[in-house]
Length: 408
Ligand SMILES: Cc1ncc(COP(=O)(O)O)c(C=O)c1O
Image 1: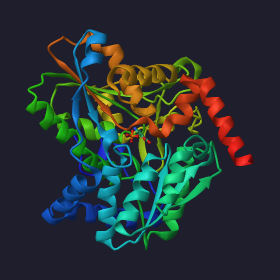
Image 2: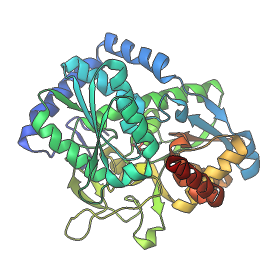
Image 3: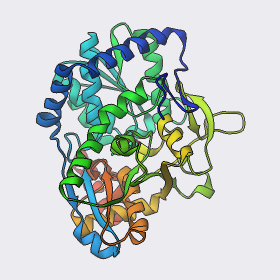
Image 4: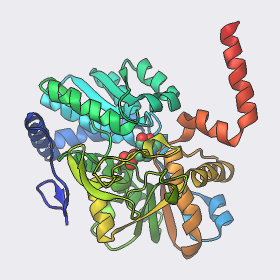
């Protein structure tokens, strides 16, 4: 199914300027060597356990199951990982590879700030210099993460080009790397970009799927479906990884439906809205206009607000192994409230898209079978968005009193 030249069917590849070919070849070789080195694997496993806090729990959502009246719902709590999301699994893996190559400077792009946060934390831990590119719009909507990145000692560089969101941050990071790859590793945060990133990020994130498989077997679950949100696709492809060459369970990827697919204000590439193109060094499904220009995207969740999908997921979507659906901003916010009230869990807005899909799909799952949803992150970072939407007046009062406290 997966070809070994960096392609997944017609998707993938390494469409970069000549200057970056050497850096990508060096990275691929290091990744391949590390993969067969038990010392590297032991180091990765040890940091996963002692620093990230793995394994993360798989919990039975008893109240949600009762409320929805269908299959048994289980939640993989990636949000309990250090820094609050799955992004740190890949950050640790790539930072260890950078050290192996001898590169001491790390650059990263970030959207929701979770990948930047994870990278900044790991760089602090491993003694690496860190610069994070972040769109100005995302800086505004994810300020708590900017504060934490800077607290970890990272330099956060605002990106003011284009829509000032994730795709523009990727452009800036690639531009930096083209001039600095001799000393710098580009720690890309999702399962996309030029080869070997899609394979590498999937491998580091497959820790989620491997743990989930073991935990589900331990509980003797008959798994009907696994559901994950999809921005670039790293939590989904890592969660699905051990099941990709099997015909079950059903694997469901949930994209950002934004204000509705018919409005054009969304980030859904796999529901008939995307076109095949080459952006950011890889061939995949993107939101493009007729001239091949990248279209603006919209999502309440910064982490899903990206015009492209990782090439392996594009391939798995076309082959039918992964089914794609979408959840709107409103459905995601409703899911935040639903799981908070019923399970005492605050889903990140990104993960809440998967939660919204569980709410819709639970009824079609037989009661003795299980649906597992990946809570890719927790929602602490979203408080300035979700409180404004879910509890507007008291929140505005709080903000006013905070501003007043500055003026005193
Ligand atoms: C909590 C969370 N979930 C999901 C995503 C989407 O990324 P990916 O599709 O690579 O998992 C992000 C991105 O920032 C995120 O912060």
